[in-house]
Amino acid sequence: MKRNKTCAVLGGGPAGLMAAEVLAEAGCAVTLYERMPSIGRKFLMAGIGGLNLTHSEDLTPLMARYRGAVDLRPMIEAFTPTDLRAWCEGLGEETFVGSSGRVFPTAFKASPLLRAWLARLEGLGVTIETRHDWRGWQDGALAFETPEGARLVRPDATLLALGGASWPRLGSTGGWAEILRDKGVDTAPFRPSNCGFIIGWQADVGSRHAGTPLKSIAVSFGGETVRGEAMVTQNGIEGGAIYALSPLLREAIAAEGAATLHIDFRPDSAAPDLAQKMSKRRKGDSLANTLRKAGLSPAAIAILREAAHPLPDDPETLARLAKAAPVTVTADTGLDRAISSAGGIAANAIDSRLMLRAMPGVFAAGEMLDWEAPTGGYLLQACLASGRWAAHAAREWLA
Image 1 (tube, rainbow, N blue to C red):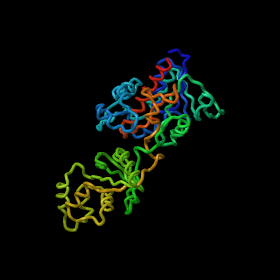
Image 2: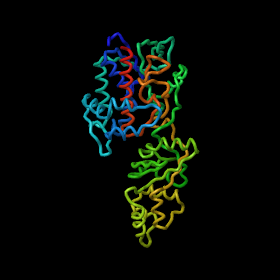
Image 3: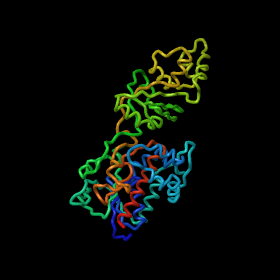
Image 4: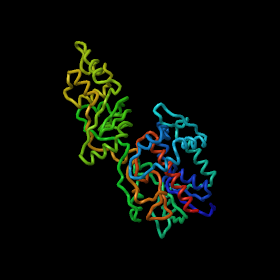
């Protein structure tokens, strides 16, 4: 491709950075525009606890993790978890598979990878313009507000990678949806995904145990069971096991006003075995001490007391309660605290190349599209894969 072909990439997150890389490698003159003062803020936030790049499971179970209207399969088949690992290692960051199957860079951080990535983009000639707040189109040109004033840009192709609507303080506010709707692009409403939920704790669960992890539990709702961890909050519950069920819980709350999930505090113990342990209660032992000896934490015991007050003395009934403690959630914690979001550009608004049907030459990628996935590497995998897919399509369109 001749260098006189210009492409504007809007958004400095993983999808936008990947798109800029692919387009620049193809010979396009790429300028990446970012609203915030720096690049990759959400990417860096994701790496605080260890950057989970992707997941090592086979493609069939991996694809089953994705929900939403947009079909991501061809994009992920074209850039698989194996390809992602090879790309990462090409930037000088080796990867490893954790015990859960999740894939991490050996450095376990996002910052070294981002630095290497930005150095590669600089070497490819990509120009990065920060503090550029996109306001839509004006007379066919991209309109930005900058510290120096208004600016109009007329690229040969535009690739939008502006993110969803979660964690808006990191840059992606979802404000672009109204701009696109005004151009005839259908969008689905934003909804929080991978989020916590509100519980009207009646006893001392929230006040005494907020911030306490519930380790090695299993959470069930809607016919699905997820093993992992959760955390008690002042007014609810959050954490990986809860995030995985968030689409089901969110939809149930929208339909019914509330949803009751069940927590198994001892998923590796059968109810009869647990009941037998609880039956060995010594004279003078409190019920709480009996539960503690059966392997339940103080926070778990507090949740049991809220689920059944007073707690049953019968070991079999108590064991069944510990294996399926009912907890009713009444609302999600909202987009401001959600890790990701569902909704965005509707599937009928894009073609197979991720080009907007209403706007030839404008492509979209990443969390702008209507899909969602749990944490565990699936979010980054889809963002990077869709960024590559849209960039290849834009390159072919420009050619």
